[in-house]
Structure formats: C-alpha cells, structure tokens
Length: 437
Ligand code: TRP
Image (cartoon, rainbow, N blue to C red):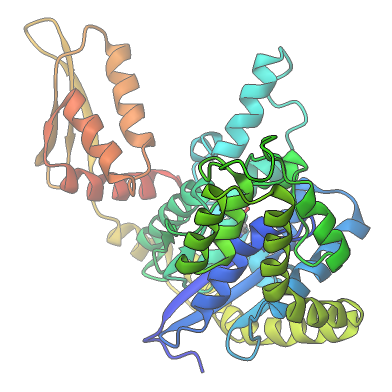
C-alpha cells in the first residue's frame, strides 16, 4: 500500500478543544480533499502527547480526542486510504524524541516561538524568566520533529505559526544524518495560501482563544442561533451593505461557489436584511454539514468503534516505526555488544570540520573568516571594533536555521562577502558536528 514513489504527507492535530467551523474550513476540509490525491500517502494523527503540554484535565483530553477523530472521519477522511492514528499509540515516537533531543542544540530550543513568547511574557511582567514554563513546552519542537521524521514525511501541511518547527525538524534530521548516516528524510512545510481564514462571531479570526467560535457539529438549532449572533452593522433592510469587512459575507464565501458568492454580493448591494442573509448562511452551511453531522454523532456515540479504527491505524504506522526505530538504535550504538565497530575505527573516520577563525589585522580591527574542512575561505568578514562584536556575529550566523536561506544570505551580506550556499552547507556540517561532544 505504501509505495515509496508516493509523496508522503503528514500532519498532526493537537487534541484540545472541540472542532469549529474555522478548523473545518482552514484545516479539515482542505486536508481531507488533499488526502484523496492518489499520488500522496497521507499520515494524519491525533497529537495527544502534545495536548498534555496545554491541558492537564484527563477527561478533556479524552473527550477532545474522540471528538476530533470523529470530526475528521465524518468530514470524509478514509482510514482505509490513509494512515490515521493516535500519537500516544506509537511508543517509538517518544523513543525517537530522545535520540533527537541528543542532537538538538539547547540554544535552538531557546529560540522556539512558543517558548520565547512565554519567556517574553514573564520578563515583561517582572517574573522569573521560566515561571510556569514546563520542560514539555520547551521540548515541544523535538517531539514534533519525532512525529515527522519517524515516518519520513516529505511534506508537512501546517499553519504559518508552525513553519519554524518544520525548519527545526529539518535541522535535527540533517544533524542526525551527518553524525550517523542518511536515515532521515528532510521534510518541507506546506503552507496553503488559498485557504480561507474564517472570521468568528465578533469578526476577529475564529479561534477558541477569542471565544468566538461556531462548533462544527453543534445541533442545527444551536448553529442557527450562533449564526444569528454574528456581528453586523446596524443598517436596516433595504439599505445597501458593504461586503468588505463583513464577517457574515466572508463565512458565506468559504462555503459557496464563485457564482453564489457573487449573487450574495449583489444581494448586499440591493439591501438584503441581515436576518435574511443570516438565514441564507445557515442554510448553506447546514447543507454541507448536516449529512456529516449524523455520521459524527454515530461515531461519538460509539467510542469503542473509534478505538478500533485508531488502533488499526497505529498498527499500520508501527509496521514502519518499529523496524525504523530498530535501525536508528543500531545506528547510534544502542545495539548488541557482539555486533558493531570499535572506537578506533570511529576516530579514523572522523574528518576535519569547517570552522570559524578570529583574528586582528594591522588596521586594529577584528575579523573572522569561515573556512571549510580543506581550509578554503568561504566567508571573509568586514572589520569589527571589538572581539565581542565578532563573537556576536558568529553566534548570530550559527543560530540562523540553515534552511532559512534568505536570512542566512542577508546576514552574510551585512557582515562580509561570500558564496552563501557553500556557507549554508558547511554551517550545517559544523552545527551537526558540534552538537554532540
Ligand atoms: N504543533 C502542531 C499544531 O499545533 C500539531 C502537530 C504536532 C503537528 N505534531 C505535528 C503538525 C507534526 C505537523 C506535524 O498545529
């Protein structure tokens, strides 16, 4: 079933909360659509280990896992055509997390957005830097790296806020590959530009944190009531209305064809009353959702069947994860004492590394160069007034994720002259190699 020629697409859904229309339009619907593409091999999973970082209520974790799993299947995800599983059913994932932890720079994790945001908030409030920050939040990107690298995913569809995590996963993969041989595929983030960002009841982005959501599978009567609560201006029926900035219009657009949208735009211009527009919106959404709602309800009412579906998915996933983990354990040296190489041969195979050289010129200024393993100069810096500035520039250069090519290139331009792609390659080697002493 899993032919290697197919592009492997993988994504995770954190199991906190109840899916809402924004999740449906922004993630579930496009992903289910994409999962039908026969040239791809889809891996979709419930990231319940990740959920523990945000939620310490066992009943909510459990309920949310059921609701999210049921939502995806009711929305058309076919567990026979894709691999659909629960992260915590794959013990190889936390096992791989540790191997990746050991090739990930702590400094890289210091710069992860979610952790940095927590730290910035603490600092602004005058609290201890790490107050209320769990090591789980800090390690979040490594667990996510394990999710992705375990299944050799080529493409990872995510929201913009997750791009950094995919870059980190790439860096973990190349560090590991450099140290232990080519085991991991370097994943790429896929950002769907065309997917609608759905506004919520108050016009801001629909999000649980704004408390402005419309649950995806609420009973029809409740959905109608919530749609009636979408904010509008106070224009009376008969007065022309603006589509621009109208949350109602944007939500309508996310569910209709271009023709239907154009017809609604004309109705706005002709002064359709808000009550009538809301009724049209409700009917249009309900037309799409109603058949799935029944399926959803039957799945939620039968959790044992859901368990079965997810365990079958985990079984499928572990057919890859179990042998791969065995290969990885062997690669790092966790293997039978009767097999393998001696430490002498390891030393012999170690090659020279690229490095940074710092020095002072006759002009009194401080410089650095970046040289490759053969001593060829890849980057010649400009002069700096102090050695400290040189140190900062080097640290900065080393800290840019090597996959972030525009940043590396523009940084290099600001400190000197060089061929940046050679630098990128060598930085990767250098970083991969200095991580583990
Ligand atoms: N962090 C992702 C989110 O919040 C969820 C997630 C966990 C994920 N593991 C993943 C997404 C692996 C893609 C790949 O959206």
